[in-house]
Length: 264
Image (tube, rainbow, N blue to C red; front, side, top):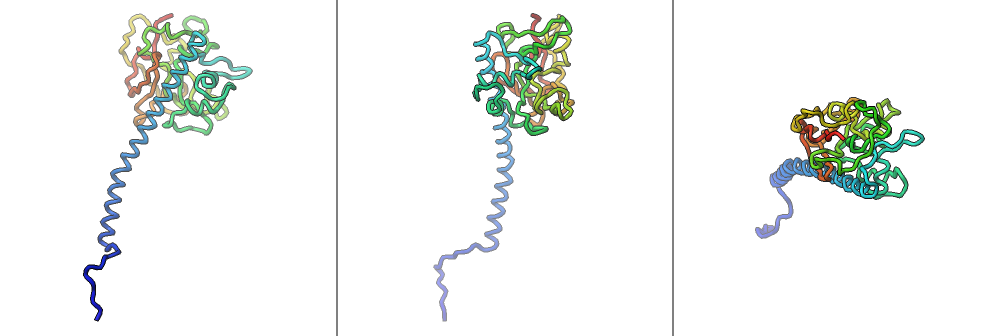
């Protein structure tokens, strides 16, 4: 008769043990997935703020060399040029030829943004008075916008210089003005479209702490030239201010002091 050795090592799980292990693994996955997802979201937000901070540093490099802040839009013909094409190559790395895609893709893309169409690399828009369209005129004065220096801004820690912009359809797809399916280079419709008719300057009696209209907060034609609160569940806007510090602002948190400058 064969005798069973009670000291023999058992090499297999029982069915109950296996089910317990699977249940524990499933429970750990259920606990960790939301945490990992939140960590990825936080990492994208930090990357976006870092991008804006780097663009702010590059802007001051440009100003040191040229005495003024970058031009927002330089020309439409024969070749279109705006700050996203002229600034990166020389101050954000990349090649030495204007408009290199390598430099733009590294610093001008927000990892949270979802492109409407492929090939729209820029996701940030500039304050149109700080980065002026020198081809456009202020309706209030009739004079074309001109470049300015950061020294002329009295509240450098309060006025936003660049921020998340709404993605627009490219011109060839029926978009209102964008050339590549990214954001407009300038915030044409910031602060209730004050750019065109008032130059985004303070009026007598303005309360600096009054809120401004955030805009539709959507991508597409409706978002043309507007801010885009694309972080924190479409409720947080990443910005860089004139003094160079980057900051996240919640929906409804923008105030007159963040958008309007003292009258030149």
